[in-house]
Image 1 (spheres, one colour):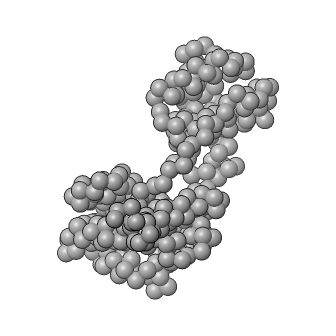
Image 2 (spheres, helix red, strand yellow; image 1 turned 45 degrees about the vertical axis):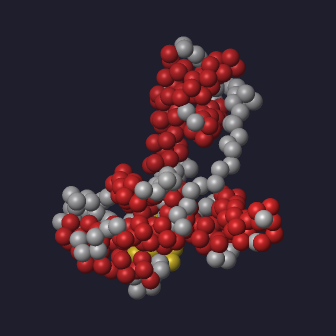
Image 3 (cartoon, one colour; image 1 turned 30 degrees about the horizontal axis):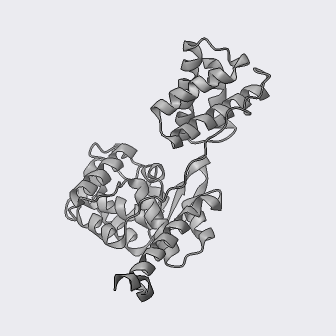
Length: 296
């Protein structure tokens, strides 16, 4: 079964052009499933409904609904691949139902909270200057953290004020840079050599002079969030959510926001319209005199 898994991952990489992070996610999901099959001595060519249900129980005991849905989707894709390759001759999708994920509104930062984040780094130290540039780039572009850490120096054009990045499936997109982001990046590039670059191409470097990692960026944002004492859960993706929500709140067309975020389906972008609607309703409830009649 392990060799079939490697064949599938090869297919994802070279035929579906999926990113290394996505492939790693598939690998983890499928290795967990394969371990179950081996432990229970289940033959994948004759998987029974009750055997699948036992695996489902184990998933629900360990994971949240969103992770479970992703794992089932990974397994379905793998089995579809095995069916097409002739390794199995049964379609198991009839009882491998992906659970419906309840819609939730992601946390966002308001303008004041963004400003407070940007006040924390020391604007006179190389690390502080780098961190300001990272935060400004996040908020100016709405990039995923994986996209930001993979930026090269050549990815940014500060004269034309844009950045070129590669998203899921290595899809290229051009994102404008605002004045604050441009200025922060210019200041960072002036001190970048103080990190003693070992990676000449990488834009953002860590203390060792190597390309900063996703974990490094997470640590910066988590640390700053604790300093601010924010009650909400803040991650690099919170800046992406904030970017999209603030654009829509200020009248940006949803199709433009979709392009900037790199969403293949506008339905994914529409979650942010629900946030805007929720915020508008909240403002209305606080501001409209008729909503306060019962307070008199």
